[in-house]
Image (cartoon, rainbow, N blue to C red; front, side, top):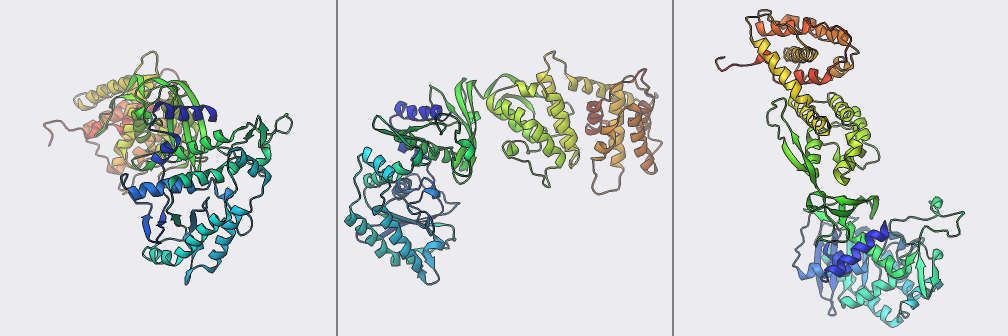
Length: 584
């Protein structure tokens, strides 16, 4: 996986010469919140204050300078600081030109924390006392010489001399304890890049004890997307001839580290991306795309990013042929004539995903694609959380990878399960109508025989309306579908008579939707008839006709309950309240 992604990343730079690896990373590099200070030879200071809400100009030369030097001065991880162990990890930069520390470490009650001077001494002494055999071997093979003690001392003195002036700059801002204060000496970019390599090469591998030398090159276990340590002994190969999963060269490991920095910087409209596509073989200038940007069918690698302290890839798949545009569009019909339902013809996976997420899952599906456990909240019931856990893998495979087979085999069960779960906390009847529109449209889309359940129920509803509105005749029931539509209509009518300020539609789940047969259904709606009998006008001919339809149906043999028709009747426009043009 990593080698495939790395190859595309490096080949992209070859295809677009203006984007070498470092340029690609810097294009998306994000400065963390804090105060950035550049110290010139004459001790004058240029500053840049960054907050989480800062919108930094892309054409500001000072911003670009800080981005480049911060990139070359950043640690691979805090565990790979220059000074580790007890009392270490106080200064979090990687070279002799910079001092990065959190505000709470640098500043005390009366200015510079006195302990900070000791941290600086320890930090710079570490550059001169690195006698680790493997580190020296790696640096020597890369052409590095030992640092000059006088040069190290001179940079240390320059940084120390600036601290009192730095405090004055810090006091101008309301900086939080966890924000960074970053000091940079104003030296050439080439010097920063060179010293970055001196730090990175010995520390780029997971652990240098796994390194081997082959034909004069050092090979080791990359630290990227790999956490092999004493706490994870199961990653080590105990019985094989090789103890680690794989080894790569130092150069490859550096490029892999930069690849993950580049992934970490991927955003759209200021928001971090958690998933996307890297085209294979044929690149586009952006390289990392989201679904609605993939307009041509092509091979691609799908990545999902887990963003914690850094970024890791927790889901990867090679897609031989992916395109956001669907071979066959979905038509989301408004079967229930629900007000303000924005359906229609959708021919992109990303658009269909957004529509289903909104109207079927109440915006709860996509945000819970990748969480380990779906949390119950005021807007997410336990029932819906369970349904999301059951269906999200199949939905994600369809929308994010174009694999339609998992969801096709269970679309009936999935959509009905979500509908019933939604009844527990549904506030508005139109929400049920929208969800039913989605269910019927998806059933039609995946039904190879072309049957349209929604259309059949819609026709039955129109026939029922004609019967109920014809008050000159006594209505009778002609089919099971008509019976369940009438029951749904009556239930809504009874609910409308309630004096309660808040109606809880989950009574449907507790009673009607768990009924075992038609007799249970009749008992349930008669229960509500008795409950609201005091408020019913028995001289209402439409109500009498609707009740007649529901009461006159007796099937010749046992048949399954038609929940779709019942819910349709409940969520559609109520015929008892129907207004003709001549009605006042």
